[in-house]
Amino acid sequence: MVINTQYGHIEIDYVSKYFVDPFGNKVLTVNDVTIDIKPGEFVCLMGPSGCGKTTLLRTIAGLLKADEGTIHLDNDLIEKPGPERGLVFQNPELFKWMSVEENVAFGLKARGVYKEQKDDVQKFIDLVGLKGFEKTLPHHLSGGMQQRAAFARALINRPKVLLLDEPFGALDAFTRTALQNRLVDLWKRFGMTCVMVTHDVEEAVVLATKIVVMSSRPATVIDIVENDLSYPRDRNSMHAIELKKQILEQLHSGEFSDEETYSDGIE
Image 1 (cartoon, rainbow, N blue to C red):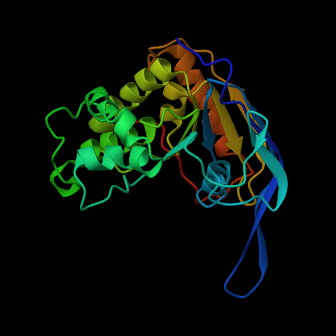
Image 2 (cartoon, one colour):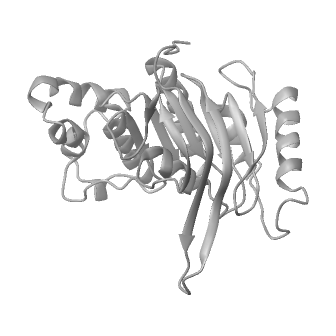
């Protein structure tokens, strides 16, 4: 595995985030969260729906600002979005009027480097398995193919950090497994740090080097589980099954609502 040992170090220090509800009440969503994410790690954030996982991810992205505490990337305070942090959502969020090629090139054009790096567009389209679909509009692509295009668009900027908000949550089981494997390959190739929100325990076990288990809202860190399984990972190995069991027990502990459910990857 190629791990970038110099860049992509995320330090989340005592971060809290509030929102104001429709009645004007101040609601605490993320509460005093501290996580040290080393360069090249693959971290999955798990917890109940609405607990604050995506809020934390968007704060790392710079789309939101922490009300208390700080987040640093390689000693630089995160205060706004930047090309060193790529972001992939559950819905691909492609520009519907642009072809695959134009969507992938968008970041280069926004940064003013398209002329110098335009050859990268085809390279990244090929890398995610979309060769032959360069001129295709998003609505002519399957959900999995659209998500591949979204990955190419995020990766072409060669980010230090790739942030993923349930990117496979809307896909069928076969496509999800294929893209999980593709993501591991891309992560190894680029040596970037990955932070991913997921509700799928098996997905976290298959992908992550570290799994952060979070409480119901306001989100706090209950446990950080180190995952030392070697890649490629056998989903049905005894170690993987035991790890899934451990995490599921934490997620279904008394810290959570009885209504909250999680996927164990079996459909």
